[in-house]
Structure formats: structure tokens, C-alpha cells
Image (cartoon, rainbow, N blue to C red):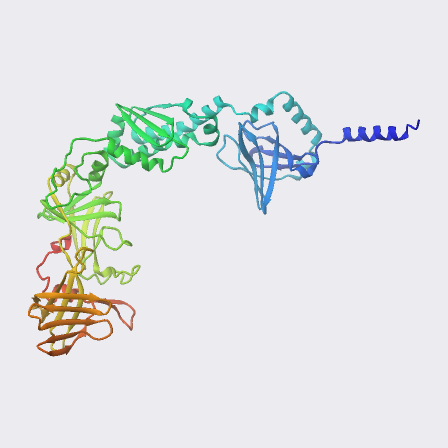
Length: 536
């Protein structure tokens, strides 16, 4: 019997068994003694490596943890493992930069390749440590889901939100988490500190933003309970606020505020009727949301029964009202690019303002300026500025809750203007709401003596407009292609268009004839527009 092949086979098998199971590794070093050692396992093509951490100050220190390398994206490599039952990327490589994501640390320290440590590396010793930790269950415990530890970690993270609430509201509610309602998957995959804590954080913001909110929340929420359910729900029973969150929950802070604003109700403090036909932004001040709006509203006055109300608005930050203290008219909001503390004012011209701000001629806009921090208030109309005093909280509320509120006072808008060679003007205005925009009026006459014509018909289409007077013999015709004409008793007069708004061909700056219309023609002379520039 020839034993040579058999001996060769034994020798080969022996070499295979003695072959090192890991390849040459690399050591990376970071700040404060942090090191990361990466050693590939064999065969190298399987993308498996062993990673040992040291100096991280976390539970990973001293552990030799198996990782999978994902380099499927160009310039991006992830080293991932299983930590406490969840997938965890501990090392992210982006364009050659190694960043660490370590459990228990919020920072992402970076490490660099270390030549000396790499040269001194002994992969066999690292593999031996790995074998011992694998055998004694250390690595299994690190990878396994630990519900108790996870719960403790979530509670610790939530404590930061509770502390912030206590600081912002000046009180600390008892916080109870219904852990039984949360599955292992919830604890692994969700940030319970966010899902349970976001309502607390929003209440903190409300406390810091509003005295009304702080008083209501401190008095009304003694216990905060969080549970997991199918959908978001906020229930207030006695002084216990129960928050039900869900895996699909979104905009939890907004949901919390909207519900709390309604739940903290009180007896109406504002008038139960809306004399003037319109409810103010704070309604009847019957719930927290309305009381917060009333709290944020300011009233400025010149001391002569002229009042400017500066209220918060969801649309354009501010909504102005103007009146005598008994009846307030809402001031129309400007185009959306401006906040509501500016308003269109055609009677005054502020020549120093920007003639072209996002397509608007700011010289035609007045402003009510209120600064709560500096306790200043003023109104600027054209070149004129009027400083106002601010009512204190009690006087403000006493005034606002008894007053009536009405839509804008001025209900017309310029539509067309022309004149003949003798200086006789022809002016058309219309309603300034969608419901009244086809309600036309025609005025004819010289400056200061224009007369309203009684029209029997008004036609407006793509080809032009025809306004016919009561007698049927007078017609004012505008045409998109030809100059407007005035026809009276069979006589036809060609008119010159006087543009309400246009652009100067030479300078490129906007020009307008609003001062002519509102101050000289006489059509609106002496008529109040329902904004602060009527009197201030």
C-alpha cells in the first residue's frame, strides 16, 4: 500500500486547520485615546470583518464585534452590526473619512489610519479575544434585545424633555409611560423620547410664549401619561393629560397645541355678539387658543379715540383693525409678499421707500409698527409718522371684548381712468371683493366736480367694456385695441387713457395716479377708508 498520497492529504489538512482565520488588519485612532481596529475574516470576499473599539467610553469598549461591510455605493462604505436587537452602523466612511456612531454618544467622532498601531497589530490575539467573548456569551448579550435596558435608555432620553418642560413652565408634572403598550419593535425602532416627549416639548414652547398658556398648563396638567395606540389622541381628565401616540404619528406638536387650545375652555369673556358683522381673531376668548391670541394682541392709541389693533394672524403674521374703540374695521391685508402690518394707502406717497420691492411699489403702502419688546408703536402714512401709546393689559382687554368688528370699510377699487382734451375726466371704479368686482360705477367731470352717472347696463368681456347711462344716449366705451371713446348724443369723442399704474419708459420705475384719483378728482374726497391713515 502506497502511503504517500495519504500522508500528503494529512499534511494539507493540517496546514488548512492551522491557517490564520483572519487577515491583516488596520488600526484607526481618534481623539482622547479612541481607537478602532478592523480585521477582515477569511475568505476576504465575504465582506465580514471583526471590529474592536477602545477608549469610546461606551459599552463597545473592549468588545471584538463581527461586522458586515456594505460598499455598494461609490464613495460610501458602512460597517454594520447588530446591537440590542437592532441594525446599527457603527462606522460610516464617506469619501475616505471614517465617522463613528456609538451607542450612548451624541457626537460622531472621526478616526484616522494609524501607521504605528497598525504595524504593531497582532490579528491572532484579537481573534482569540473574539473567540472568548463569543464563548462566554458577551457578544450574544450585546446583540440581543434587552427590553429593560432599552426602557431605561428611553426614560433617560425623555428626562431631558421633562427637565426642559419644568424649566419653561415652572412646574414638573408626574410622567407615566405605559411601557406595556409598546412592543419590542417599538422600543427598537422608535425614539420614544420623541413620540412621548414631543407634546411635552410643545407645551414647554407654549409656556415660554404665553402667560395664558403657562397658567393653564401648570394648573391643568399635573400628570402626563403616554401610551401607544392606533392613532394620535389627547385626553384631559381632571388634571391628567393622556397622550396616545402611534407609529404613524406626524406633526405631534401641532396636534398637541391645537387640542390643548380647545380643551382649556373657560367662560366667554368677549361680547357674545359681533356688532359690525365680523368676529375678531380671538372670537369670544372662550378657550386657551383664543385667549392666547387676545394676549398677543396690542392696542395703540393717540389718546383721541383713535385706536389701532395689532393682532396676530396665521395668514401674514399680523392683522390690523382700526376704529374708535366701539367699532373696529378690519384693514385689508397687503399682497402676500408683505406682512399684515403694512397696508395699501393710495392717498399718501412715501417717496423715500422702495419703488419696486418684489413687484410692489412700497411708496403706496403705509405701516403700523409695533414692538412689544421696546414697547413702542407708531403709524407711518406717506412722509408722516405718528407715535402712539400702548394700552396696558387690563385696559386693552376691557376695550376689545366689548367692541364690535366689521369688514373693511372701503369697498371700491379704481378700474379705469381717461380724459378728454378739455380736462374732463372719465373714471370707473368697481367693488373690491370677488362678489362685487363686476359692480361698476362711472364718474364724469372735471377735477373736484365729477358726477356719478346712473348706468343702466355694463358689459365687460374679452373685447372691451361698455357702460351705458340711464338715458341710453350716453355710453363710455373702452376697447382693448383702440383708445376709449365717449359717445353723447351721437357725438363721439376719443379719450386719452390716464393709467392708474404704469412704468416709466425712460427710468423703468413704476408711476401711478392714485393721488390724482383719491385726492384731486373728488370722487372719494372726505371719505374714510377704514385704516389708521384716516386720522393719524
